[in-house]
Image (cartoon, rainbow, N blue to C red; front, side, top):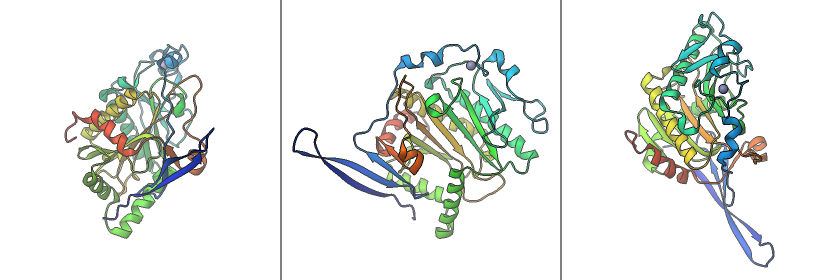
Length: 345
Ligand SMILES: [Zn+2]
């Protein structure tokens, strides 16, 4: 097995303020088994949690919100006719339309609900499944008529600390001729692993994590939930969708199962005092059948408070290296409780 979990434990020593004694603090440097990128788990840091009152202004009805039911049909754009003659895609409460700010060539926004506000526990499996299903329907339609719609991902920014510009719950669909940096890095590293070992990295990762049982949260094939050995964000939880190379390979049962898992992770985030998160569901290139696998990651962001410290500092923004407060093994032990009723957990 070629999966390697490299970790160095360091001690930082300093003289205490106000006396002669010395203290030591622990620091772990961990290396991601796929990308080789590193992460730091530092004793003494803590990501800020939120106070409920800080959400009042976002929770209040907003007469200018473009995603509320009374305005959405009037103020949001319509999908180009060759992709979807209806102009918008509706599944359950979800309404999907193009993004006015195109972060990708065929960027779309999918509003989850007519309700202006959802707490993290209000993201039910049904709301998430409908939103994801609408996004997949859009990606499939775009890819059928545009040969350059090759790389795609399903993403969420929730609340301002995550980069979200509107509190009304929505997801962002990425469809583009080019992969993002992370999608490119995953693909290149998975191909290199295949060349070196003649095996699929993701299959080996699932087998190795299952064997170790330290970071596995739930196994209900084809979807395996776990925490990453070397996280890129706080309270990070990931899922690997085994045997699915790209997002259009997901069955409706896969969509339901992913939605159920996402909902459980959000309930856990709520229970530990966080209200803002990011999510990305990465896909291999459409139409290619390599060793890439659909995989998902979710992280908490600093919670909404009137004056908050961003969780991205020089390390994250300029060194591409996360500094974290908890070990992935602790995170797995916590989030596992929320998957107890899932089959195979
Ligand atoms: Zn709204």
